[in-house]
Amino acid sequence: MVKPHPTVAPNTWSFLRDAMITPTGFREYDARWKYPDDINLPGITALGLGLGTQMHRRGIEPVIAVGNDYRDYSLSIKNALMLGLMQAGIHVKDIGPAVSPMAYFAQFHLDAPAVAMVTASHNPNGWTGVKMGFERPLTHGPDEMSELRDIVLNGEGVPRAGGQYEFVDGVREAYLDDLVGDFKMSRPLKVVCATGNGTAAAFAPDLFERIGVEVVHSHTELDYSFPHYNPNPEAMEMLHNMSKTVLATGADLALGFDGDGDRCGVVDDEGEEIFADKVGVIMARDLSKLHKDALFVADVKSTGLFASDPVLQKNGAKADYWKTGHSHMKRRVKELGALAGFEKSGHYFLAEPIGRGYDCGMRVAVEICKLMDRNPNAKMSDLRKALPRTWATPTMSPYCADTEKYETLERIFAKIKAHFEQGGTIGGRAIKDVVTVNGARIILENGAWGLVRASSNRPNLVVVCESPETEAEMRDIFANIDAIIRTEPGVGAYDQTT
Image 1 (tube, rainbow, N blue to C red):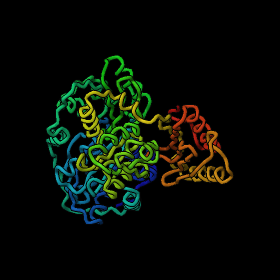
Image 2 (cartoon, one colour; image 1 turned 135 degrees about the vertical axis):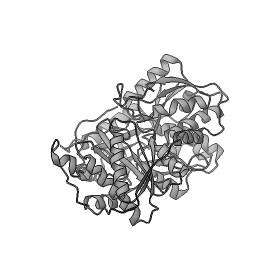
Image 3 (cartoon, one colour; image 1 turned 90 degrees about the vertical axis):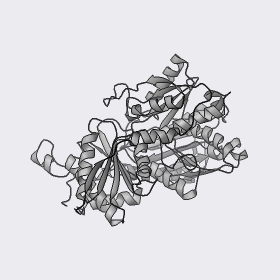
Image 4 (cartoon, rainbow, N blue to C red; image 1 turned 60 degrees about the horizontal axis):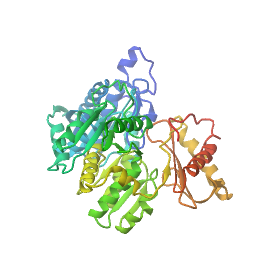
């Protein structure tokens, strides 16, 4: 295998022949590139050859389940990836178009030791990538991604005989059957199903109807041009649209899904947009009644309520705060034997006996419907209002180049640390601690906090703030942290703010 080139000029003979891969596309826990700017089809084939070689190196049985999301170029990307896998001697089981959790399910359903899902996840059109894993229900973490990057970029892929292709039909139906089981709603429930015209449109409406939910369709026609908004339930644009639809239709709640269906967002009956970490607390409260002394994992972007909520404490629940990222969280949930993991982004990891431990927006939607069924006299707004009040920002991402973001973050860390050691305040409060398990989470004397970290999958930093006291304090915390961030000239505009 020849080493891929970091750049190849478009519209040239070489672009159609020689592998091009920008090294920064190998992220902490999956691979993401702008296509065709940062990777070409021969580059994708080189990635497949490298992934197959990694399987052989690790002694993985050479069988892999492969799916793709609903983008106009995803089939071409998948075909190029499968070609490389077959070159490496791998038996490819193609499950067709899928949401990412359907691909994870296929590992169990087909007893496949490996999975590769071609998806740009929630990234806008123009992006592509691969989520992959060898050990069910886990996906590649930093160690596996570093190994794969070295194999691919150093030209260490080894062609082998024995590769074959098989299309496996019926996985979508088996996946939906597995999600539904024998559950049927016993109370009437009217739900806005929002998919932003993404891949989940082929799954979520059918799923809701099968469990007896009245469906209000919101952009549930498959359209890979995403004419209304990019499907991302962490983005205020999508949440605002879900809120308007709830209020216009009198629905009980809205459930929205991202581009590859592994995340779920919630809006309640009053049109209140409930950030996913707060929904996680609502779910944890309900689950901790059924499973005493449960352990929950929350990512560092999430609300402090997982540790401080009196209902969770009364039920004996414990919280573990861990690194952001679907691979990190899946691994932590499995290592600790936790009942569930919750990310502010809307990735939820429901382990046995609820789910299989991987992130599945469809599973979360079913479990929220079950939660509502177990609380027949409660509205979603009642469950929200029952939580201790906090004020939190959405996840805000200022631009910072992939080649610069980690060094930029180190300088920001140093400035925050110096501010802390000099007795400085944030939001007018003394700093109690700075936790650096994944970025810098600045914890204040009253339990308020602010976080700054580097995005693992896009050229951005990430900022989140929360106050248990007032919205004004939350805004002051953000302003103070942003003032430190703005000392770095390489940091650009935010995608959204408070």
